[in-house]
Image 1 (cartoon, helix red, strand yellow):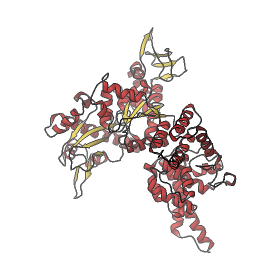
Image 2: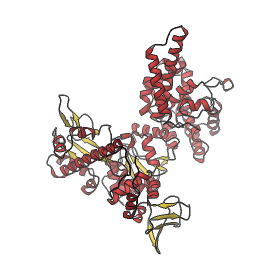
Image 3: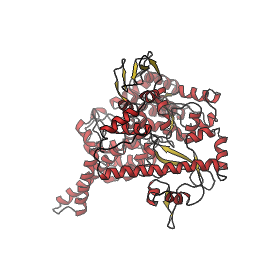
Length: 613
């Protein structure tokens, strides 16, 4: 992207009130010609953070950080310099100019601005329709009955989409937008019988924005029994990427910085109710699955994330998946134990700050436990502790979680708790944990070279070796074995992405019949790979258990999964070519073309997937 002109940068800087910007993250008080407060970059009890309102710079005499307003926004909001400038320009109404810009880039930028504009206009229309139309009366009654005040709902821009087929189609074109732009914005779709119709109809509408407050899409809640889907979001497109967005982040950013934590809930009304109750550091994942991109977004704002998801099975599973997704990120995940059958909106009941309901919710958030402790507790709750065999199986599934935590006081306390719950000597639990690292039950040691791990495209295989029945007979994994095992571990770590890759794997991709059976097992047990493992197939049981442990420390991403899969596909193609040449013939043209295509795709993904160090 072209750079902003220096004159534009200076004009933005002149317009910015640095005290106002910084005050969103820490309280400032005047100290002579400067402003002073607690540093928002490190914990301290006495203020050592100083802001110069005239020069528009800051400095902390405690930790040494400092810079101008753009540096501050870059650091606190996780933005690039260009985005920081643009963010401040938007906030203070300064028009910026770019020095030299590729016409294609400029056109793409202008197009995104057009799509955001029509989304904004439509969201405004929906808001007006909610509060002024007769059709939306039941929707108003539903929202108000949940204790959400009109003032709060208006602040979040909540609206209502009419039940007509073409309201947005017609009004959007009248406002000067093409049908193609309305489709690209996710507001209009093509009908089955031709023509175009509104994407949202007879739904309560929730505008979805990015951290800078720019419209990205909409979410709609059903209001009629005949509507098949309770919630419908904008389709994935040029602006809307559900996996990269957090509902309410634009309003929660400053509160997250001040509180030093983010609270994550499931739904739109949960966020609105929490903000209304004064828990303004709350955002939603718009469902139960938390993605790597959402974790990355949260990590840019805080190091502590409290998951306050529903207490049902789906909510518990989502929190456990979050543990895998957050692996390797600088984020401490904690879990607020929500009461069964109550989501935050139900619990808060529309009450404001200082109410009994708000205090109850805050107590749950403040008392959140580490995710590993929650994970262990969940496994113990599901274990059959009435029989020795059931307790043994409970220990089998708990030990890998404990071993993956690393040495800590928290783990020591959990070891004692596991012993008490299972009626076992804590020493036995500790010995079983030690076996994980030595290659004993329930997981096995792997040994492989660093170069193999890097070629595999994901994971660090130092000190690891292929599965064997006895550690002393361990052998070095081949590159192919590393790739297939890292891919399957990542599929377990991020099943939302991994399910497709498990389905695509064929026997020709895998190194042994045992890995084929592992693949078949994961195809139907990816969300709970250790539940009901086949006791008559010890090889599958051992490999799956091993992959689960690996998944808890392996950062999974779609790019890394794709790279490993492409490399397995390339190995299959190369074998086909080699077999043809061994028979004295020329390799089939389709295999040669496949090899050329795969070579290009692998090179592209290798540039996006960092090697493990």
